[in-house]
Length: 254
Image (cartoon, rainbow, N blue to C red):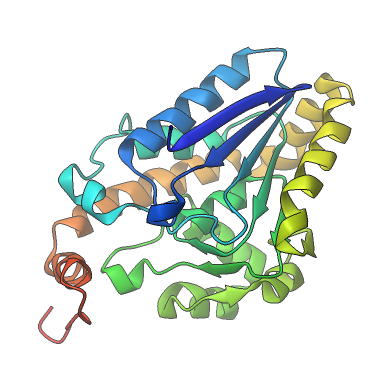
């Protein structure tokens, strides 16, 4: 069975992370599948809303490290950047149902969703510094805007998880429900949106986002350049080597 499941019902495209044995960690092939699904959804009038979901115990552990190291993203047409630019510029409503850990891109992609419903077991983390890297998906811009600088610094510099209640307080999520109810709530809200005039939905979203749409694209490009450079530096090599060797990294010499 595919690691990314897609289903279109009543105008709602549901994209499901379906790799629970690997904590829904995301491979290049999965990024490509999601990027393609979003690109097709832009063109298909029958798709009016997109829903992202994982499983009740895990949303996504972020990048699959082994797959990531095999062919790191280096250009704008790499699958991960196709997905990131695709979700950031997607014109129709996007909803996410998030239960369990949402690590790295599992959290940053939510910044580009319009509605986010979290299970009470959700845990959000941005461990880029811990991997010797820098933020992506314009999170270095959007996280300070949403959390305020000092909370953003805590999230991005320390990389420690914050729970659903904190995410609700700062506006990252709209509502907290039991994990068994998150997907159903997201689908119910998606059906409400799908019944509304798509032209009004698209124009309202455009107007809300136009003030910094170009800034987000610029920030993502700069982050991508820094990310690619830092991937080859000693800190990242130590972090990834330690991860694969299942030990704590030692950054004292990098």
